Length: 332
Image (cartoon, rainbow, N blue to C red; front, side, top):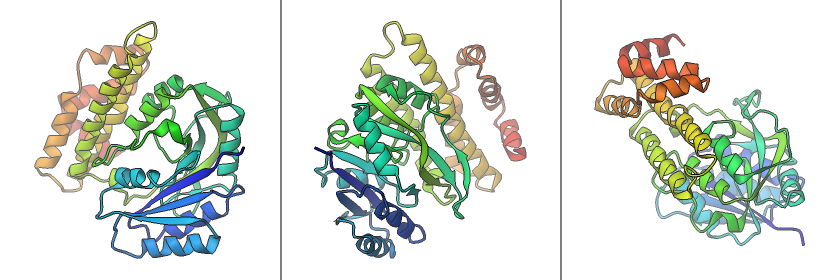
C-alpha cells in the first residue's frame, strides 16, 4: 500500500511569499493527502492568502489556529499533532519546491527502505534565481542515520527540517523544542541518530529563499538561543553514547567543528555586525562575551591539525581582540 503524505506549513507574516509556497505544493506530481496550515497569529493577511491558494489548488486543507504567536517550533508541533499520515513534510512558508519533490522523495524513501529522505537545497533570491546549492553531490543513494548526524555537525548536510521527508513514527509527538529560534539542529540530530537508513536524492528539489528579514539572520535577544542549541547538542550526543567506543574521536571532532562553525562564529558575527551598524548595547556585549567564553585555547591546535585553518585563526583573533575581529568582518 502506498504511504500517505501529510504536509505542515506554519504561517506567520509571509504575505509576500505564501501564495507561491502553497502553489508549489499544489502543483506536485504526487499530491499530498493532507495539508495542515498552522496560523501562528501574525496579524496580517498571510492565512487568508494561504487558504485561498490551497483551495484554488484543490488541496485537502485543514487550519490549526494557535492561541497566540508561539513560534515556528510550536507551530510545527501543533500541525504534526493533527496528522495521521504515514509520511510527514514540514515546508517553510516562504520557500518553494520543484514539482517532483514529493514524488522523488517518497520513491527514494521506499526504494531504500529508509526512515527519512533528504534532497539537496538550492538557495534562491526573490527573483527565483538560484544563488548556490547547499550540499555537495550525493555519491550514494543511502547513508546511515549516524553518518547523517556527523555530516549535520560538520555542516556537510543542512539541519533544516524542510528538505526532508519523514516516516511519522520517527518524529515522536513534539520533536521541535519550543520557545527557541534556532530549532532544527538538535532535533534533526536526534532524529538522524534514531534512523537506520537515510535515502538521498541528489537533485536540489527544495528552494530555500534567502530572506534578509528572517529573524534567524538578525541580531537580537534570540541570538542567545545559539548557545542554548549548543547545550542541547552536547547533551544529546553524550546521551547517545557517541563519545564512547571506536568512533569517539570522530564524534568529538564533529562536535568541535559544530561548536565553532555553528555557534561561536555565527553568534559573534551577528553581534559585531550589529555593533558596526550602530547597535552597541549590553546585549551585543553579552553575546560577544558568551562567544569568546566558548573558545578554548586547547581546541586551537586540534582545529589546525584537522585542517580548519581559517577557523583556528578566526577563533584566536576573536579571543584576543574582538575589535580587530570586527574590523576584519567590516572588510568582508
